[in-house]
Length: 204
Image (cartoon, rainbow, N blue to C red):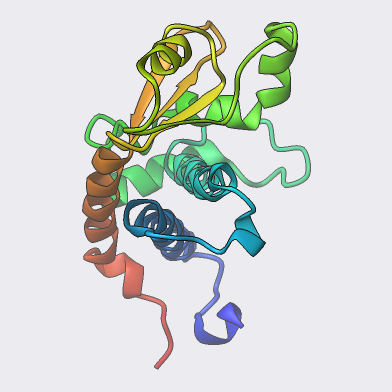
C-alpha cells in the first residue's frame, strides 16, 4: 500500500527513513500513553499487570532501537546488500534532520534495550539465578523494594516514578525515565515532521 502513494526513484531514501522514524516515534508514544493512562486492562488479553506493562515497555524499546538504526547505524558489513552503506545513510539522516544523540540521550540509549534483546545472555551470565519482570508501586513493601533495587534484576518497572530499570552487560544499573523519553520523542517528532524532506515525495 505504501508504495502506491510514494514517488519511488531510488534517490529518496531520506524521505522513506524519515517517515519510518515518525512511525516508530508514534508507536512508542502510543505505548507510553497506555502505560501512563491506564486505569484497568483486559485480564483476558494480558492475564496480569506484568504482561501489560512489559508488553508496552518492550514495544517502546523496540521502537527506540529502530530509531537508533535509522540515525546511528554504523554497520558497514552488509552481506546481502553490498551496495548499501548504513553508516553513510545514517550520517546523511543526522545531517539532514539535525539529530544529535546528546539532545536525545534517552531515545538513543542503546544499553537500555540490550538487556531486553539479549536477555538469554544475561540469564546465562547470572547463572540463571536472577530476578526479572518486577513491578514496584506505592503498595510494594519497603524491604521488597530495597531487595529489588539493591540486587541484580534484569527488568524492573517502578510505577511510582515511571522509571524502567535494567542492567548492561557489565552489570551496571541503568535508569530509563519514561517521562523524559516522552518529551524527547515529541521533540524529535517535531524536528522530523517539520523538515520539508519528510513530505517531499508524497503523491497528491
